[in-house]
Image 1 (tube, helix red, strand yellow):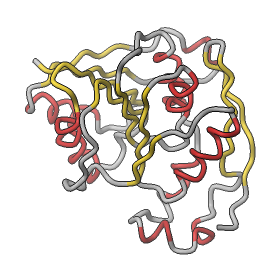
Image 2 (cartoon, helix red, strand yellow; image 1 turned 45 degrees about the vertical axis):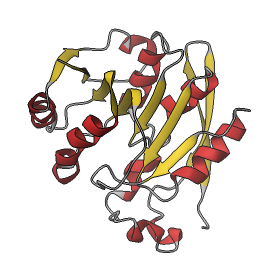
Image 3 (cartoon, one colour; image 1 turned 180 degrees about the horizontal axis):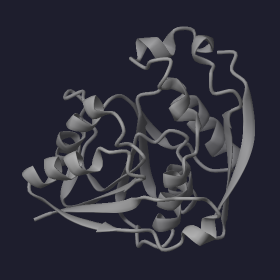
Length: 216
């Protein structure tokens, strides 16, 4: 794939994460048909290559959590800022995304930060044949934006979360969170909603919420 890239740095606590990202977000035809084969439209293709504000909020939230000995899954990881942070902290993390370029950049960026490779699964949470095992913590940022995908997410989380586990989703309010919360509560999850307290530290405009789900 003859894609063009750039380099960006993100400071999360005392950790500096360097990421190789897409320089030009409109490179759909440069994937050799891989994006189309994965079911990704030309319009949705650029969404993967951006480190969204929600990803920064999630990473800064995780730096303050007690995560040792937990098996963690990041769904819809995109550029995987949170996964790279967790990897740097020595956590057991798996990243997941449907985008065909994700694993190459995930591997490149792990090496760029002198870290071990991150376990990765390419797939959609609408695929009921996916069996990733169970996780103590499942995280995601800015993943509630397409209704046709959101409707499958609750079932996926229910299948892959440990009985005593937790789901943490950071969402900038793209209009799907209310439906998602109802789907989760139908499955017996309890919901806690809060707003980030450290937006000023990030230096980015952000208006969104942190959703935490635990089993009742």
